[in-house]
View 1: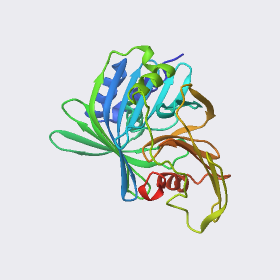
View 2: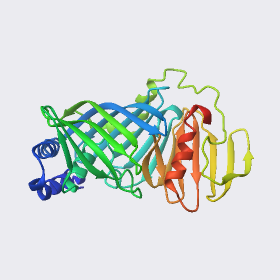
View 3: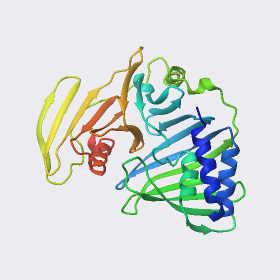
View 4: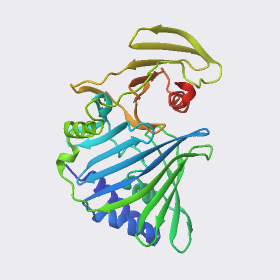
Length: 325
């Protein structure tokens, strides 16, 4: 299999470098020359006046092994996005579950925590807006957060001394901050074993952090979302002890399924087809007809015949606010 990510980077570098400044040319060359890397940082995801903070850790090993661990600062819950020779996965260690996703991630969009994504966006931008001082360079480029997303803008901040990024700020269509990633450390040519990218080993290792009792979510409850689109109301609901199905009608009709997911000694595996996206700091799945994610031991599925993603993401994100609990 070809080294897809690195080959793409080389091609973009050859085509675009004549139009680029020193800092972006240096960054892309450093990255294309590296056989692996480790990145540690902090991610902030914004929703109206609220924000969620997470730590992230990225491992990359050529040709195209990638592992992204995103850990909440609120409750130590985490998700792992993993790509190996067998496919793409989203792992949820707290409930011992993995989703295998038929997806071209990460080539299908841009992700501010992945260095290849930043290099790709820079190479594709003919005339990035540049701001600099004695120590830093800021580049403004276009970006897309998932396959079907509208093009938005991002600002990538580089340290001149290292030639590497220190911060990425992504803005939504209204110009508001959507995601901010701060890179605390970047280590190129980091020594990584291929076993780091194995699904079972990654799940087992992550679960060790929770101790013998696992990660316990107190007072789990399935409820109405804190946000609904305008002229939309609850039409019907079906309630059991472990599952709630809510159907909404009005200007935009959709269904919300909430299901309690209990920790299990046996790994639960599901295969899906779609794209990975962030739901207020949580790794989720986007398909043609639904958005799915697991948060604090509850699996949420928001389904509709026609996906209005901005609206569904606002509904989904509202479950992570205090008033939505």
